[in-house]
Length: 157
Image (tube, rainbow, N blue to C red; front, side, top):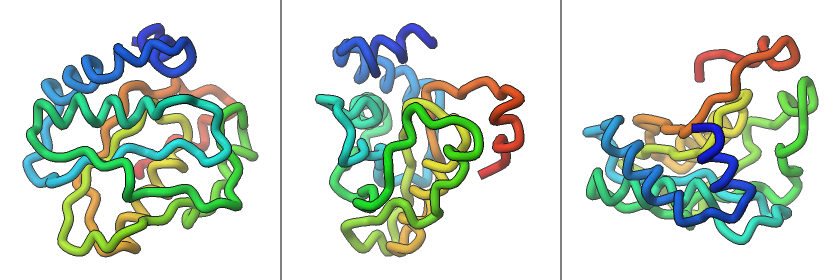
C-alpha cells in the first residue's frame, strides 16, 4: 500500500491511480454522495498531475458518479503542506480552501491520497459547507501512522 502510493505520488507512476481508485470504490461505498471532489494540488506545487484526481476517477468508474477537480481550490496565500512537520503542519487555517461554485444540495465524497493531520480534509469540508454542500464521506488511500510529533493531531474530523 505504501509503496504503491509512493510510486503514484513521487515516481511518476500515474497509471496506478485509476486502478487504486477502483479498488477504493469496490471496498467503500457511499449511497448519499452525488459527486467526488479530489483534494486539489497546491498552486505552488510542482507535480505534473493530481494523484487524488486519479483516485477519484477510479472511484467514479465504480460508483457511477462524476469526479470534478474544478470545484475546490487552495487560497493563493496558503503555502503547501508537504514537508512540514509538527506544529507548523497543524497551523493551517480552516478557510485554507475555497469552492469555485455553489454546491447547494450536493452530497460530496472527498478523495485524498494520504491523511496526515486531518487539516487538509477539515479545510475541504469547510469549503464544501461554505458553498452550501454537505460532505457525506472522505476517502483516503493511506493514513500516516501517528508519531509523538503528530500524535496530538489525530482527532476525529
